[in-house]
Image (cartoon, rainbow, N blue to C red; front, side, top):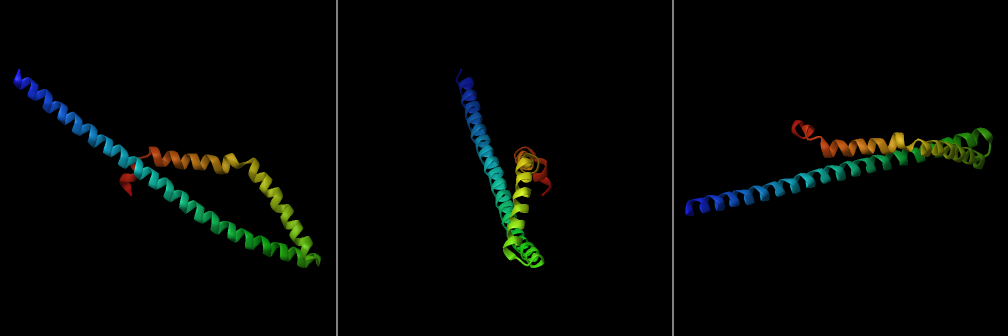
Length: 120
């Protein structure tokens, strides 16, 4: 009877150790995936900031060019602003295709694709 009790205690101790190890592994995996998501978010944010700075400078140049052609700088800026408004409306209407779906695919790739972790 004492031998059976010792086996049960040993089994319970091994089970407790296994569960603690498994919980630690899940926590580390979650932390790694969260770190990946945050790093991708920061990289995308920085790239977007650089793109919008470029776009702003480019649009100011276009506005000045149109203003020079029309001999009225304010008209060049209004025409450029109108074009930006139209393009922004088109972008807003198609935001699911070019914004939401790529973000969802990226997050699914980070959270559920562990094969890439082994190759990098």
